[in-house]
Image 1 (cartoon, rainbow, N blue to C red):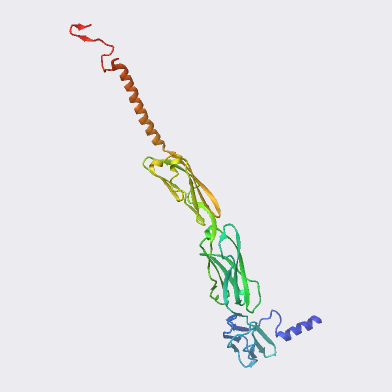
Image 2: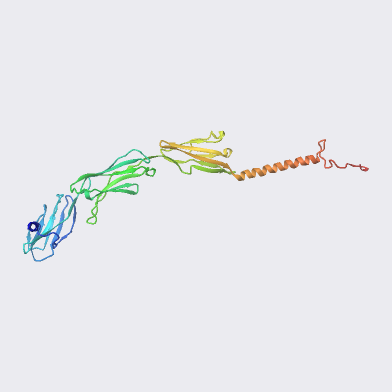
Length: 349
């Protein structure tokens, strides 16, 4: 019996039972309207005959209009954040049914600003960045997009059913990397209503240029093997990337090379200084020190050529010694008859 009275009371208040179809069509069926702008929706009865129909609304309500099958709701300026218009029809048997029009009243942000680490960052460390969105509604439709260079790397959303304007903040934790150095970072806010209505234009913050400090890294491998080739110059390239810009120090294996400029990023050995050995270069800045090694050796072809020339000279020297032993007389004169017969006018003696 108690259930009967509860159910009867529900019918009396709403005009229909839960799940009952109400033959009403509203165009559009959902509305997204900017605060202060006009609204117009048409409600049509899909059944006949009816006694009449109308709109219940805090703005633009019509009351019951008899003898019509269609009724518009017109509001010159929407100023109620909680507006919930209802279109109803009264049947000939005194029954009533109604449908609520879903209305979203919105306001775009007054401003969007980015805060957090504004000075230099150190590679590998984490930094908290914050995007502040001022005076926006409704927060449930607010999306905050984070951009780093050409990359959109994060989207912030809000589980907030407050219909009136609020201030909201989106935060991200960013791990600094050398690839971020010189990159612009910013955030932007927009209200998302698709597919009911188009999204609002994005409101961006000012962009910040990221400065990331990181230790030197050599462009080429940290250990290089080089050969001295005849007629060619050797380049010992110690170029490194780093922030701040690295300072270089060279160490040479031979004392005669110490007068070279040791602050250059490259070292070119001129021919007179093309000497084998172990060279190293140190690149340093406030974030770290790195050392690069060069192992310089003589070309094997150069050694073979030198050996062939040396053997040739030794061969000639040996030949001269043999010739001297065979054809030089004790008096120091040269004779091809040394140790043989001496010819005379009367014959062989």
